[in-house]
Figure (tube, rainbow, N blue to C red):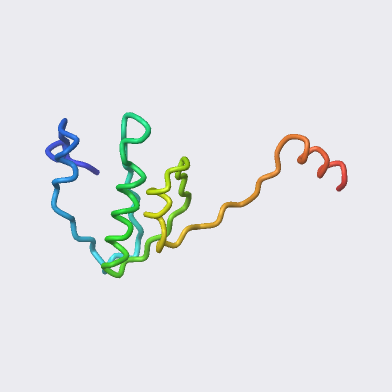
Length: 102
């Protein structure tokens, strides 16, 4: 849980925070949420940067979904990280046809 003393109204201060060390003896994963008020403010890019940093420290990093929105820089930043492949989902007419065949 985030303590209120860690909150700031200055978005630049978030990037100025020192890198926190992660406890490597722990067996449980960590879930971190990046929040931004608008598209294109750098949430995905920052997450990928942190992923590379953690990977370089020897911590396993897996990207569940990478949505680049066509941004080449974001796609390039995802290279080198393990990304879970997307699964094709059936929708609409394809789903109805498949149900009729069974």
